[in-house]
Length: 126
Image 1 (tube, rainbow, N blue to C red):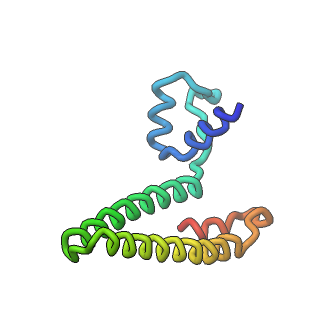
Image 2 (cartoon, rainbow, N blue to C red):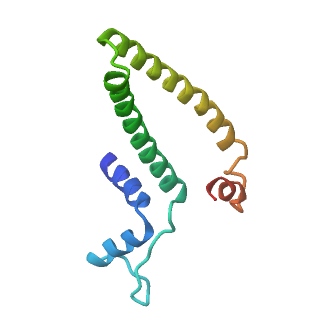
């Protein structure tokens, strides 16, 4: 039961065109005219996953470039490298924690459950 919920979330995160193509590859639900029934895009989830993907890419690039820089450009000793990398990790963690507070404030500014028009959600997504 838990697996089907996770797969449903991943299904909603796929781009609309890819979901339609995958549905055509298998037999699915159809309406009276034989057209595929498709739920609307979950734009918030797609934005979240895209943001997390690019955030991960950024983290990998920065960490590998930092290691390269302190090793080959600055020619630091192993203890100096450890200090620089731990300091950079601390700064990144602190920045992430502070920005999470900013994002929580921004994304919870309007109560989207009471907003039946979806105006506050569209403001955040576009």
